[in-house]
Image (cartoon, rainbow, N blue to C red; front, side, top):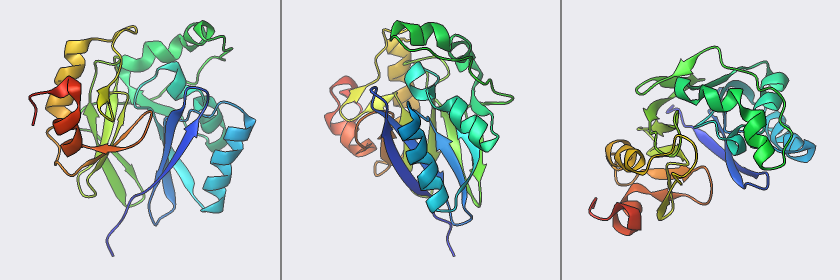
Length: 218
């Protein structure tokens, strides 16, 4: 029997962050970018996991901007996990209180990673795995997670439907982002579905043809 990764999307917090749960038939699951903001959203996530008899074995962040880590501590404490990120994203975690204050949010000290991911690594759960792509430009430490077998990738805030991530925040760089997209996202199979950190999904083929920031990459 072929192993199939299932994907569940939640849209959490006033930032409208796409939080994903990935799982397969073993019941092992990965939580990606928990943006849960209040007890109601915490319960929505937990109820889905419980109802489907899923066991989170990994929490990963595509990047560590405040909107993508709001639920990190909750998930870590609920399931006995530590976040797994790219090392370059560590300063955002360590200074989450400062960044949260900009938006009027009181953020507790964030639980810190014990291990890090880099380009080419695999994240594994159950019988499944996904390849890590390092895609900085929106923020240092930005990662994508790619399933070659099932032709989909979680792209964080690197690329969106007919748009790209903003580059005016700390560590953002437009040229770096365009290079990341060109080298690591547009080189994926044209039929690859892209699931971004905000908004709805798209495909590599569609973005090559219609993304105004990527003219000339068809």
